[in-house]
Each structure stands twice: as C-alpha cells, then as structure tokens.
Amino acid sequence: MAVVFGKIQPLKKLRETLTERGIHRFNSIGEINEFLKNYNDELREVPDKEREKLDWDIQTFDVSIKAAEDLTTKNPVSKLYYYLKIRFLNNRKAVLVDNYGKIFVDRCRKSYQDLAFIKETVENLYTLISGAVGENAVVNELRKLPDTYYLINDFSLVFNPPIYNKNENDRIVSIQIDHLLISQSGIFAIETKNWSSQSVLSLDLRSPVDQIRRSSYALFVLLNSTSNFGVEHHHWGSKKIPIRNVIVMINSVPKEEFKHVKILPLSNLNSYIEYFEPIFSESEVENIFEHLIRDQIPDF
Image 1: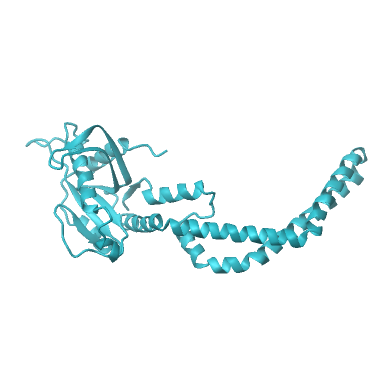
Image 2: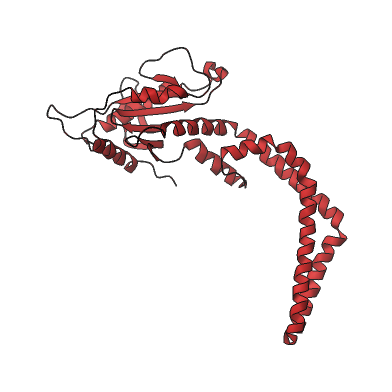
C-alpha cells in the first residue's frame, strides 16, 4: 500500500466551512449523502423525537427530586438546603408540565429550522462535496500502489523569490497540486476533476491543463535546481527528476488530447503510472518525499 501524507483540500475546506456554521454532525461525505437522502424522514420524525426528549426532561427532574428527598432524611443538618433544592426542581418541572404544549411546538419549530439550515448549507457546498468525492476516489485508487510510492495530498508551496516562466511571462508565487505522487519512475502531478460533460464544455471554468502545467513547471524548476533533493550523483552527471502531468476525470472525459498532460479516467490511473520504468532507487524516492514534505506550507 502506498504511503499517504496529508488530507485532500476540498475535504479540509468542507469541514472548516461546516464548523464555522455550527454544523458538527457529519464525519464523512457518506454521512452528508445519507442526511440528504433521509431528510424527509428526519422531518417526519421530529415530533416523536421532541416529545420523547421533553418527557425525558420531566422524568429527569422526577429522579433528581427523589434523590434530594432521600438525602434530606439521611442528612437532617442540610435539611434547609435540600428543601430549597427540591422546591427549585419542582418549579423547573412545573414549567415544563404546565407549558408542555407550547414548549413542544417551540422545540419542533427549532428542529425544523435547524434541519432546513443544514440542508441548505450542504446543498450550497455541492462543489466542495463533489471535489472531495472525486479526490477521495483518487486517493483510494493510489493507495493500492506498492509501498515504494509516496503520495502527498494538497501539495502547496510558496516561492520567494517567485519563479519566472519566460515562455508565459508569468511570475509564479505559489502552487497547489491535488496529489503529488513520488515514485521510482519520477513524480506524477495529479489534478482531479469531478466534472459533468457540461462542465467539460463550459468556457467559464479555468482550464485544468493550464493549471497543472503552470504548477508542474515551477515544481520542475525547484526539483532540478542546484539542490540534489537526495538524488544520488550519476557518473555521467546530475540526474533529472521528471514530472508527468495527469488529470483524472471522475465523470466525463474529453475526447481531445493535450500537450504535456495526460487525461485519464480513474480506472486507467494506476496502470498508466506503473507503465514507466524505474530510474530511482527506493532510498532516492524516500529522500525526495522527505524534502518535499519539509517544504510544504504548514496546515494550520
């Protein structure tokens, strides 16, 4: 199984956004999908659940009152204290009993509002959820590779000074790559797109081809600079660390081919990666991995 480092970006953003909005009930994408699937069932269950909770609150006061009464007889010195406590608990219980109908309606209304808020929030986060689903599928596929492969999720770097690409007249200050796979055959820069056929044809979305070529150019310059990044010296000279650009399409795959970028369905990803002959030793791969995670932007 491949060595995996870091969490996927959409999942981190999704968790941060849900936490900011006070939603803590989800621990996975599967739980979110299950919530949306069963939303109407949860709405129907609200009255029974709120009635059960209200009855439980009343029963809890009964238990507390009985415990206080028992302690009163056992400890006459504190009789006044327990008398006041019993009176307080009885008053709190009376509020629930005397206003049972209103409290029940108010609690149901609050539950309906909370469920509607969660549903609206989650539906508005569809892009993040879709991205997380796609990237998680890629990670699960790459995990199947042997332990000589090292995977870095959400690879991010800042360059100071910026890296200048004269061909594009572009100063590259920072890069972010969904998945960076370090192997004996080199490095694979992998972007994941969980796009529909309409999104593939859309002129409004940024080209993932341009995105990954820009990031891999900066990374290539860094990896093949004066630093050897743990690569052993060859008697012919310094070895190049190749980077292969891959875009994994979870849904629709364009028919066109593009220069310097391989576009694949998820099912073909691992076979494509394993096609290439090894050029580095296992220790060199580990050294490159350790250098790259050392340079990562800290995940606060």
